[in-house]
Length: 342
Image 1: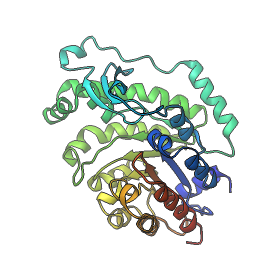
Image 2: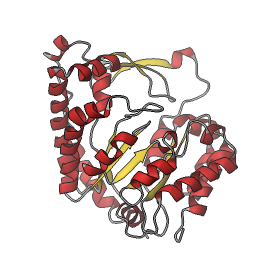
Image 3: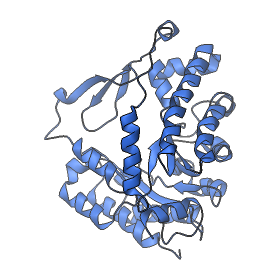
Image 4: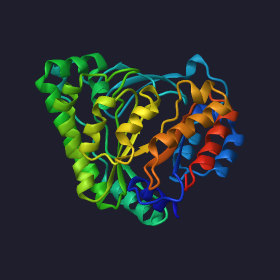
């Protein structure tokens, strides 16, 4: 099978030859392990290609980090961040819309240019039919919480503030423009991501999520599904209460942080209904467990999510703190245990 055929077969429960593999390696891990890690990735290739690894390689820190490497920057949406260069996403220092008075004069950043969409279409033509192509659906919950400041935005939702509805509706329209252009260019999938969970509960009440966010996600997801494309949704943390909702409104590839909820619990809700992109435990097992424990976690995930027809994509994030032996155990287990017949 080609990588694209394998990925589509897993998502569509159409009988892949093995569970597809997707790597995510942070720049700090590349800095720590260097060529050894690059050689390992060559041995266990990513079914999505090595673009994310190559991008992080370009962002790799050079030499030892110092206080001078703590940088502040303003993103395209006007939010000011503080982060350690090359390692972390950082934290919000100054939100773009600190109060609703600022909303009156706020300007969204420009939409992607026609040239960018043309370049994407050319990339699709180059990569098809061998490679699977996913396109970004745009930010939503997390982006708005950064723009308002997390505490402010949670209060906006609790108060059902009209400004929050205006911001969310504008965000949906902004995203739909690029979603529709990516679909017209031939994207196989539209990718979304919002971290909705804490360690043991949803960040807001499920009823508030269903009232404010669900119908807006549904509009964006429907654009992809109506065009015959898949919907990929990533979310960290505890989300058991909204998994059924996500499947109902069109998610076909779900990437939950399943360990905090229990892989079996998530599998009982999802197995055979939606393809799961695994998130092998990166809080403890991958960075601090033994290679044997890493392998056992991979086996547990496959047993929880994979059917004989597909439904499982193997993925585990690798940060700077992960020892090389555990990375090797992770990727070896993906290949050893993810081949069909299971």
